[in-house]
Amino acid sequence: MSSIAAETFPGPPPTYTLFDANAVGTATFFGTPVMGSCLMAVNYRRLGQAGRAATTLILGIAVTGLVILLGWNLPQPADLPVALVLVFATRWSAQTLQGTAMKDHVQRGGRVGSWWTAFWFGTAFLAALFAVIFAAVYIANQRSGVASALSRIDPGLLSKSDPPGV
Image 1 (cartoon, one colour):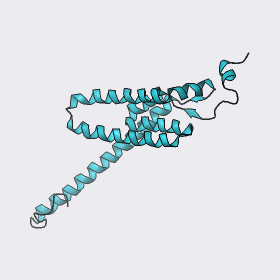
Image 2 (cartoon, helix red, strand yellow; image 1 turned 30 degrees about the horizontal axis):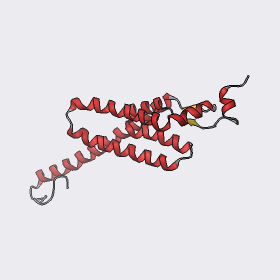
Image 3 (spheres, one colour; image 1 turned 90 degrees about the horizontal axis):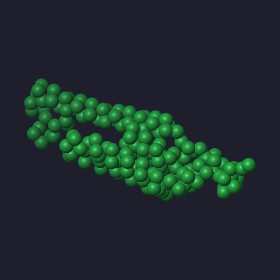
Image 4 (tube, one colour; image 1 turned 90 degrees about the vertical axis):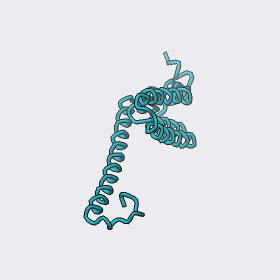
């Protein structure tokens, strides 16, 4: 007795793996909308839709950048609701935009990407993002510290037209 999937979709199962909406949500939770959109972009590439992959990735980066800028101006109690909205919105986008393709993929015998993979991608991205932010803050503090030390040695060393940190 053959399965319904084999009758509906003749031929061998797909050799590639697609990430479902829950994996996209997991990657977003641990690694910002950039990682959620990365998994969606991987799905689009594997489905042969490179244009949509690029667009999805660019939108994920733009949304993350916008939220970071907004986060600096919002009160701290607003951070958690904004983060949760981003996770659910990214998951909803994956379900809405790729749900049918995902369902067809599974019916044809295709593999579903692991949530653990999504977790580790998200966590690795977040660690890299923290490292970049830490390095930027450290370098900025070192530069301002050098300028401050030089001005204490010779107050005329930095002219009034030079901005701090030069």
